[in-house]
Length: 122
Image 1 (cartoon, one colour):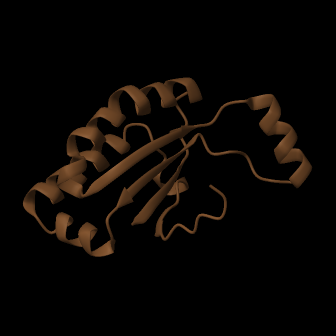
Image 2: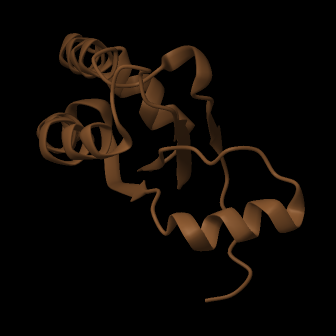
């Protein structure tokens, strides 16, 4: 399995609450409906919260401002991604998801990448 990790920053006109509500209630179901077409076998949303605690963590490490959330999408392998996105249904589903992402994600400030997981604990 490979995982696509997407660190999300919201568009400036949205509050974090608006962003997370849209992401969970509107975009999440769109991903679920299109998962098979694009080869997603697992999809998890991590919503930033716990502001006071996270501020202490960030200050103690000298870290940057937190993301508004992180999306994790698992695929069987890299070849599965390519084969799904080479179909008309896969291309259409990916385009529809990207179109929706433009409604709430600041794509220029939201890095994403595909990587292998190496579980260490658990």
